Image 1 (cartoon, rainbow, N blue to C red):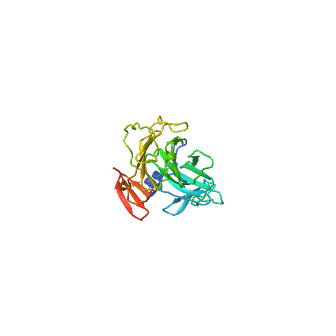
Image 2 (image 1 turned 90 degrees about the vertical axis):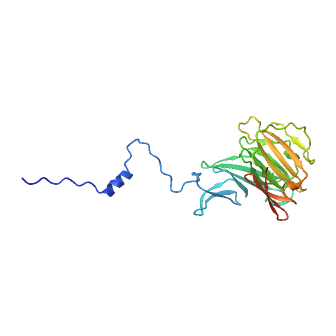
Image 3 (image 1 turned 30 degrees about the vertical axis):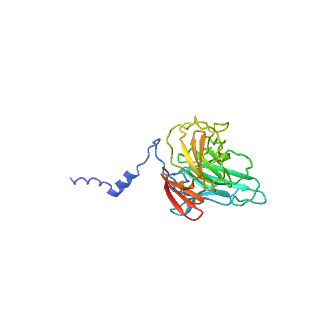
Length: 294
């Protein structure tokens, strides 16, 4: 009889590898979706550069390819400043008004201003107004300073006292102390404080050198019962050469003013920056000083 036919050959290895790498998904089986080729600013692990425009829009750029990832129409006037509160939270502010035809926060003059602070959450794209509206204000907003814990936000105004908000509740903090402070030439948060209790100090005016005043909780302010409200401090330099240190614990603020400018730098301090336990100050004379917070 003729010999039996040879058995069929197995598939080539390449075909077997492809089939193993891409198995068919059975009906109803759970699968992990692959990311879209051009995601919105969803992957907060990505690096973005935020840019504010004169039209009130905020652009998120991918620096690797210098391309616009997405654009948000947030403000009705030019964006004056941006601040990353976290990789998934971007703060922006605008300031318009001023009367006499002025529409820029950098212009001098009187009139009233409309200051808007918005928080943009990523990747959802949700937007909320962080600073409660106060109607027309007498000074334009020129800067934001977020505390090291992220629990408090300091709003800086041109030639006017600052304002502090609790970022978790959007409530005002230290409403009795901050309005008494003179305009500052530079402001910066200090390293976190220890959790020692705030000393009891009789109320007095913080405008006098060496004086201290502690604010009490008021209606509409952030109360000390808010969980995980850390104790923090910030430093303000005054154009007359003195400094003011604000200690914040819950909804209370203790202000201490020192008439000695040698603790920071000689001359008029115009800029402050913090890195860890170190602070850098810049003066009107062009000098830069590095000093330790302790």
